[in-house]
Image: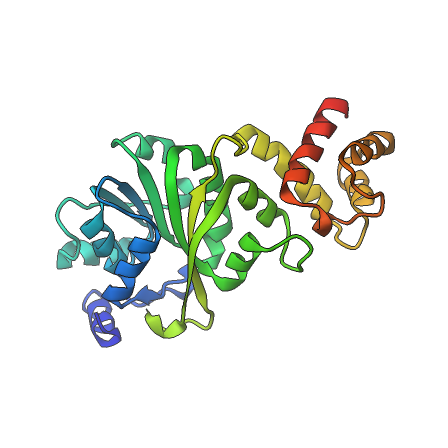
Length: 280
C-alpha cells in the first residue's frame, strides 16, 4: 500500500491516525517480509502480533507462519480490517488491549513454538517488553519495533550513559539476534523518530526465572534510582539496606566500595541479589 492508499482507506472508514496511540502505519510490503524474516518466523511457528494496524506486517507473518493471532486495540481499525477483508483467511483478529491480555491463556490456545512480533508505541513499549521477559520460557523469540532510543537502552554496554535497569534485565534474559533501523518515510504518517526493529532470542537454562528476575529488578532499580551516588549509598537510601550486609556482599563479589550502578555488569547484579537475599 502506498501512503495515498492508506489515507484513502482510513477516510473511507472515517478514521485518522491516532497520535496518542502512536499510530504510524508501515506501508512497504517487502520491508514487512524482511521484518518477519528477521523475527525468525518460520512454517512451524505460531505468532502473536501486537498491533495489527492496517495488516501489512500481519500478511507477511501469515505468509511464513503456521498460525497468526493478531491483537489490535483500536476498534475503528478492527472494523476497517473486517470490512475490507484485509487479512488472509486463518488469521485470528482480536480486538483487545495488549496491556490487559491474558498472555498465558492465549499462548496455550494453540501448540507452539510461539513467537511475538510487535510494533510498540512508546507509551506502552516498556510494560509489554517487561512482560515478554517473564514469558521468555514460553517463547521461541520475539521481534519488536520500538523507538531507537529504547532499543539503545536494551543493548547498552556496561558503563555507557544508556545502561540502566532495563539493560540489565534484558541482557540477563535474552540476546539480540538481529536489528534493523527504519526511517520515518517507511510509515504513514511519517513519525519524527527513527524506529529500530530488534529480534530477541531467550537465553537458555542460565536465564533467571520470573521470580528471580523480579528480585533482581528490585535491587537494580534501587541501585539506579540515584545515579550520582555510589551503589552502596543508593541501595541504603532506596532499600534501607544494612551497611554491613552491603559491605560483605560487595567484598564477596569484588565490587569496589565506591562503585556506581552503571559500572556493574548484569551477571554481577544477579549475584548481588542472591548475596543480599542470603545474608540480608
